[in-house]
Length: 303
Image (cartoon, rainbow, N blue to C red; front, side, top):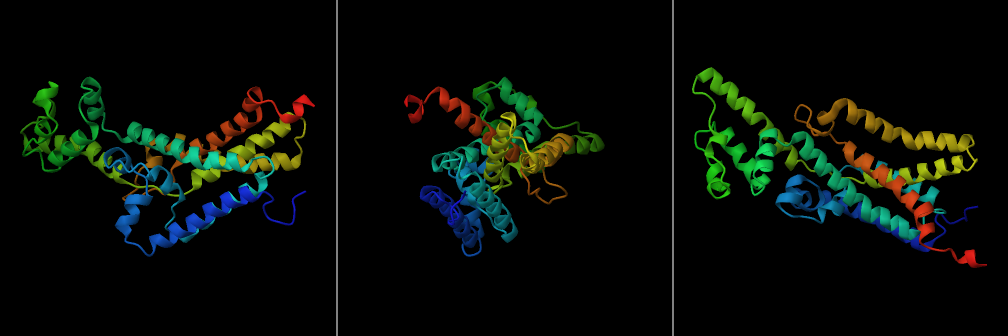
């Protein structure tokens, strides 16, 4: 039975309380400090990590919320799941969730962004010439295509001569006016898409909340496998699996559109980060319940 206190373990309570207080503080900062400052340090994006090297945003963005409904929904999910799991997930493992999930989900989001929105021509050229810097090439290619290829600046700024890349790879489309416009649009579209998506920032603690859901779902499934699959466990598994299943369906059905702008409005949901967070929770439960027993002998084993 749970005690009268909301959380029986002081360390567990302190970790969750610190997370909630931190979230509230960052939410308040969004409404007090300059937007540019918060956007640089508390949102996660390709440009912020790869180009500007703001690596701390891997974690800071996951505890950042700028809207009231967002922070309430995420904080509520973390508190509810934290309360339900406090008897089977020590404070140390809660800390592992808070440390590992932001890292894994953020890196997965970057990989998905590159896979879906990286210009194929740029990918092929970088594979052929590994010394070509991806961000520099995409940036100057975007600028020269936006200006109608009036001046070819990519060969100079990307040092094509040193890398042995012929300048012909960035030549202009045919001189015929109609074909030239069509060719410019065709060449420019993927770089414009990459420019927008690589700068788009994400924030929120949804991946962490889903990792706790994954941990809880794995626990209930484990109970079921041990012969304790009653209606409560069935309902719990169904409830905890609902959002990951919906995220997976959205991701598989919509593909690249699931992580892209829609008519100029950013999609607020990072489905890849959600699913990686949930999967991390599943893995951590397996590691805690089975993997560690192979490495650590419990104290009562020698009695």
